[in-house]
Image (tube, rainbow, N blue to C red; front, side, top):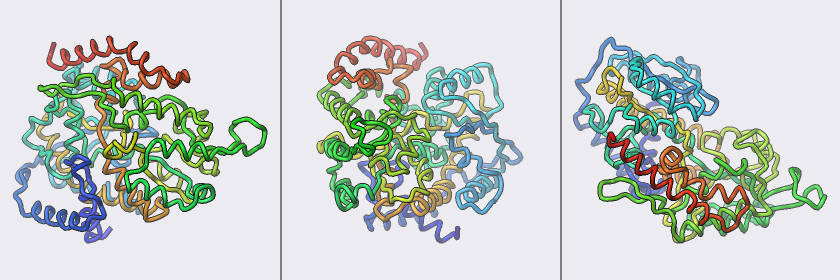
Length: 494
């Protein structure tokens, strides 16, 4: 990519980046004054002294432990190690080379293939055994949250070589993943692009919408007007079912309003994409349980309505090939469970596809919320790292360079140009990116809150119990409060 084009894309991305803003504070991408503001900020940043100007580690090998599985994003971390003509790969290669030259280090990578449920135990054991071979670890945020509570990670907020206010860091995300709202043990920024890849979004079949309801752009207009809600979604899903094979029963050959991979992890974007106050923070920044309220009951009512609609089929493996094939064969209006990183899976689909955020619980919800899956990979500095300040500097430079080159290339060239079928889809990608949020409850809830945030909804939903959320919550509340107390004790060294 030419330098001028990369700079323009980087400036455009600043308008929608959640680097250090909350979604409510981020200007829309179509707001031209926002682009001018971004240009002014970029110019100012280039003239201000670089606090890392004199920092170098000449001749030092920098070791990164990186996950290489079928659902990881190591191709955006390590890349192929050479230029191969692919825009994204070449941007990754050039970024890594520039970071090495800037700091005088040489990157080495150790690839791992851990399953999500072994990350915590294996990484924790490694560090507690005194293993000092790794300067940076990139692994699942759910597992690494447990490693942080075990005091195995360095607090990056205490490092002099990082500035979380710079573009390229997701400061709010990191803050909200902190137990005390202050310390930073899990690193999230543009370099750790797996978080972007694992952001949930809805795809819909524009041609099916046109046949059944009219102009498929109507959905985009509803989203833009803030009117895309569960009630509207359920209405469309209900109306889209057709007994295609005419046998009088719902089966795999029929046409549906929505298909989803089972009733399990597929519920995350439904549950956490609402504005239910699962926790609040006390005067010291610590989380307290506040989820049982009228909004929770309303949320369960809507989730039940969509999962048990006649127009919904859940008999698929989560994110499985049969789920994707059904959608690509025009078998469903919507497909749930897809994430931004899956968008390329559907590039060969003949029908036009559209992309929208998950709906609001109702019109009282102020914004669309994008849920990041709990297995998204973040960075962490092990307490055994040789020089945490060096790791901070490396991450700072990598986030800077990713923000300026790799992310614009991936975000604009790959997501928007290669896969988007219409101009509105590009705008929706901006909106989905803009709504990315952390989920303390999703990341920590399993190990430290009796999984109450997920299972108070998931358990009765799996049973088909239309009014079971209250009893499911009550069954888990006592243990959840006890475990949250234990979390505070362990975090504070007890």
